[in-house]
Image (tube, rainbow, N blue to C red; front, side):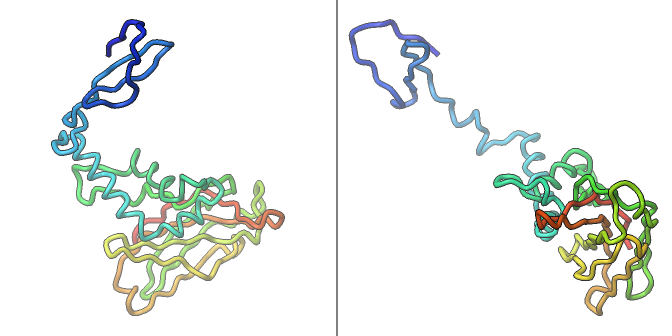
Length: 216
């Protein structure tokens, strides 16, 4: 970067060739544009390749369940940050290892976030063509209510298939049974559980942090 002396000559502004002219603190400054090689667009470094692969791998993992993630993170959604972005942050920092196969550990996927009291002592077991999910009835603690509804997601990431159950079970029921049809029964499922509570005034849900119940 160079500063040009003050003169009566009218100096250019903007880009001319590889030079950029602009005003800084009342003086005309000229600098050269960075060469394309600085961006490593065509010759990325090994670290850049790893980062690109991470971005693509995590996005591919999350894309099939993006609607469920928008529900789970609805308290934190903005115009520019959706549920996938929140879930990406969790996996990016804790659940991704480019040296392993598969590179993503589904145990670090969080499908919801919030201050509602979450599930306690939750477990998922497979019983033939159904998945049994149980938890401790903690509906008398904190701001929890017996009528709080379950938010259950079963995800087969290998096949990009998921089950977001239409039936919502109550917190005080302490169990849920997910029936599997002939197409879904042969698959293995990662199971996630959270609770949701309807805010009648705002007509929105508040949610708990989700918990991962393992693969069944």
